[in-house]
Length: 473
Image (cartoon, rainbow, N blue to C red; front, side):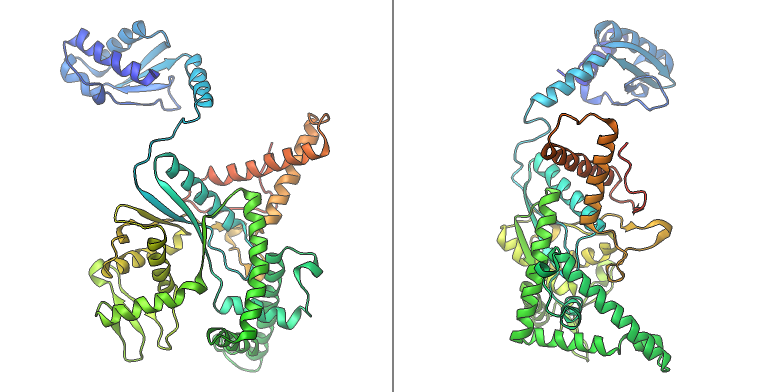
């Protein structure tokens, strides 16, 4: 029997013996003693005043004296107003910890018969993973483990944002500036290699905007009229039309990126049961929208765009298909949600959790309400696990197109190097081989990084200083 249950039982005995009051152990409220007071476990005595017919401090003293005599592990007590603080022998906590270590099932619960499809990571295929992705993956992977431990059947999935104008920008950047180079010839990880050409495209685009502004064009107009952006838009149209050469380049560059991503996932120790590619489902999403229009769940504007009215849900009108028939993020999310429900046979009591930054709170409210209007029984299970974004010192935002993001792979290398420096300074690894040292540094460095991320409340924004990084000492 654990110490808390022992205390509850003895409080019940104390109430009966001292005040002739019959109580149930479920009514005894225990909590951790606040840091400013002496003690480990606190009992609120206010609920017992009616039975004791005494003041809170006198009641607390009487109960404290009684149970201290009954439980050897209680080494002392004090009463602060209506709170009885108990001091517990250190051996109790050591014994509990040893029990946790030896019990392979500690902290786990039997199956509750419910499923969870948990989406996390969600990278774009035009750039490498950054620190924000690491925070996402740590939160997602940890959430999956916790849900699995409490009895859910968890399926971890990833969404790969592999289509759209941003992807075409990296493709066009490679065509213009790579001179046929590949990750192998450049001796570079695939996702980093492709990301270089997204940055190269953006630099060229900025230069062209400046030229147009200098010629007298307004900046906002210039941003949408650069020659290189026109080429990227033309490439996107070719992709959507199924142009063979464009699709071949798209597949080649995406595969470079996927290979790079997988190396990062493996190093971090995260995994996915299934990858969903945006390119595979945006047409399904469009068909769902078109069917919803025929069933008068959605409405169409004069320009041909299709919308949903969610004003009765406290939201507003939301675009589902543009006037030219192209999809928006919500469109493809409708398709992917339907496919996941089919893949994992989700019912009304199952969950679909999306680990995405909290700037998308509104998007997931709209997704859930739209699915509900479509009559999908899994709609109530849609849940957004939001988290605060990562900023740089001074409030600066991380921007991949400007090369200011904190690269995930470089951060991991930095942490491993720091772990090695600290270990060398402490001088306790002289007997280890080089292979053993490398393994140790990897475990310490990445373990410190994961702890640094997970110790921060997910709801809070994080400020990450690349210069200071994480202190291992």
